[in-house]
Image (tube, rainbow, N blue to C red; front, side, top):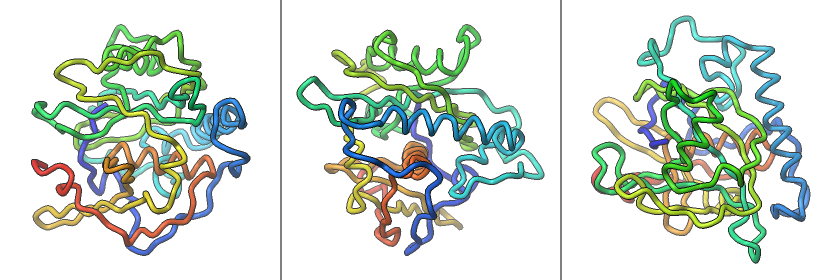
Length: 272
């Protein structure tokens, strides 16, 4: 799924400089973050259950993306967020996996969009895209898109469930993140013309406070701030970073970080 620019509507609770994360809802992280040596699957199943419980208790707020606010909201907005009147459904795959049999650390599967694309070139995203009429559900859409974009065999993925949808008003999508786990992904091949490269980012690198940033993007009349990650020179920002930020928080894996450490995404994407 492409990494759209964030806006106040798409990230209403972006961190303020110097702010610290609120207490997490999920269980505390126990042990290491290896797929075989930790209870990571139990943590992810708990995350999915959090989302299901929220959707049952607050169906209206859930349908409008309330679970993804920095502090989950319990009330739906009084009016449909701008740009979401006829929102299309989409899905992304948030896949936890080991890189290979010699590296059992949990990784997240991400992609870098091709630099020649007209929209959002070079940005980091989860595999995913629009849910088509022939897709049975968001899970089917996420797995199909991952297979098309990077050649991921769906048979390798154990799907744990879907989280509540997250809004992307700038593009008019409601995006359902699908949580999956895989021992390994097999050989992955970027789709020519759409995906420049496949990224397998260690989850523990996303947790490290020194890899956390706040992106600050100035536009005429407004300044947009949102959580971001800078890992080995790669900037993960926008919608993708918001999903990762909230996910780590809900899992109870987030460590206090300095939100005053900022980065301008244009330093990493000059054509932005």
